[in-house]
Length: 125
Image 1 (cartoon, rainbow, N blue to C red):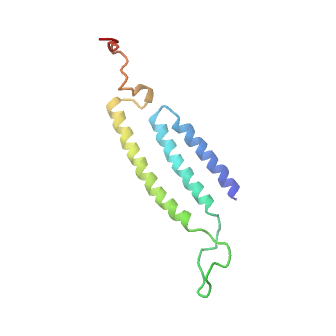
Image 2 (image 1 turned 90 degrees about the vertical axis):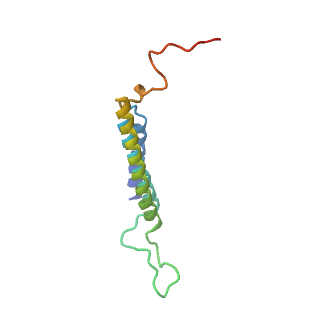
Image 3 (image 1 turned 135 degrees about the horizontal axis):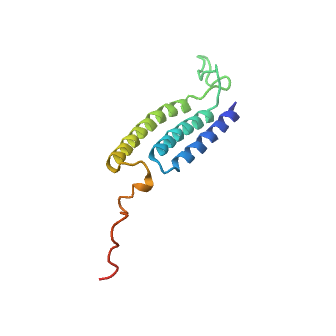
């Protein structure tokens, strides 16, 4: 079971890197969202996939009787979901403002610091 999840994590990371290397901002945003999901699935897979065995210690025992699901990765994933959603919302607003000001989502055309038809600066004094 973990092998299939590991393969799925690899596919998610591959798709995320492919989308984040694009020159269009919308694809970069989708790549960031997929990357967040890939990391969450990686943490979840690393925390042992056990069904039906909660990490509860009996009253008369000091330790767990056998292997059980780990609750820490689930708590980390819940925190990561909130953080990745807020980061995605920030990037979405930032890209919307850039698109609104520059009227393009192509990063090659967003070179405000490098004007195209400006004369070259003087080379000497």
